[in-house]
Amino acid sequence: MSSTANARTRQSDTWRNWAGNVTARPARQVAPGSAEEVAAAVRDAAERGLRVKPAGTGHSFTAAAATDGVLIRPERLAGVHRVDRAAGTVTVGAGTPLKQLNAALAGEGLSLTNMGDIMEQTVSGAVSTGTHGTGRESGSISAQIVALELVTADGSVLTCSREENPEIFAAARIGLGALGVVTALTFKVEPVFLLTAREEPMSFDQVTGAFEELWSSNEHFEFYWFPHTGNCNTKRNNRSAGPPRPLGRAGAWLEDELLSNGVFGAVNRLGRAVPATIPTIARVSSRALSARTYTDIPYKVFTSPRRVRFVEMEYALPREAVVDALRELRAAVDRSGLRVSFPVEVRTAPADDITISTASGRDSAYIAVHMFQGTPYQAYFTLAERIFTAYEGRPHWGKVHTRDAEHLAGVYPRFGEFLELRNRLDPERRFQNDYLRRVLGE
Image: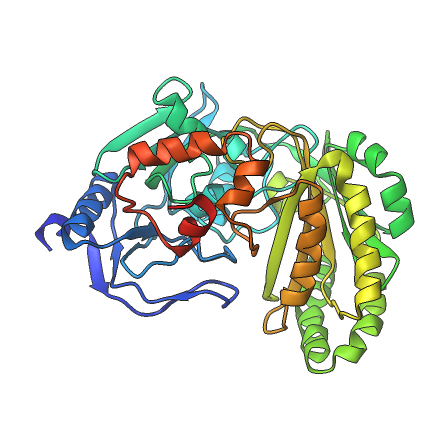
């Protein structure tokens, strides 16, 4: 153990992801505190003939982080390393939780431009699987990276940016842990701003009929459709000159804690036990959230607490195809006899230049389907996946899907470029696991 003397190493327990649908039994778990300690852990694993996988908080629904070798834990690779106001950047350790990053940036009067709706993940876990929010011009969290530090299979520590190792930078911003272990990330940030959120119910036909207008006239637009109903809830986030008008404590508790977490969890448990009640639950749930408008700093608008656990599949489609695909999904669910208690979420992202980003080279819209934890999801997800793939859909790397390397090579124009880079950086597949074997091939 001399080569990892400074890293905290312990015999391993079973590792589980957040949703509980993935478990692994790594041989060892290591918590390094620096890039050098990560490099030592990788070299030590190679000497022992063990695979290596970094893990964040386990918010991926796939087995992207699962390993029977060495699991690198993130907790000591956390914190803000540097704020460069002149360049408009912040550098953080890869294990920094997004909630910690958001709070630290707000304390400095800064903010990311866009983000997803959950902030429990570590920054490296979020970017490695392509976590995104919704935006007309602003892309995923990975699209906001301007540099990163990467430990490769031979123990080298590389700095990657558009100027330095640019081909690695293009791929490692969403690298699936296949190219190495990300140890630090530098994000482009901007002075903190205000967003006004406008949430209101609309009918399915209204939203789908006006989708292009709603997308084009708002900086950030998303909506949720409740299966077994014709009801949707919409959210439009746009920059505001202020003044701040945050949600009142009582209103925030009622909507976000009681209705979206407490009561929602209870009715989903009822639906899991008695599936026949789900259409009625869906009709009640879809009418429970009322219209509201509020103005606050970005992370308090973009993100929400999510304590009701679920399993999720999400596909990125060409934006112009999303309405047809969603209408087809609705018709298929109505015909199927399935009972679906979770709403379907629709978001967008502009095209980006990240090698295997779900938005690589094309403006995209995302359809996400969910099932409550412990509820059989395979039939519903199979039905949805058949529709999404017919529209040239690309699966979210961190969410349930059944696609393999042969299929993915056909929907990602730069897929071969990623594989060539992986062959160069990890020829012995030190960072391989079963998930990568399926989605990237041998």
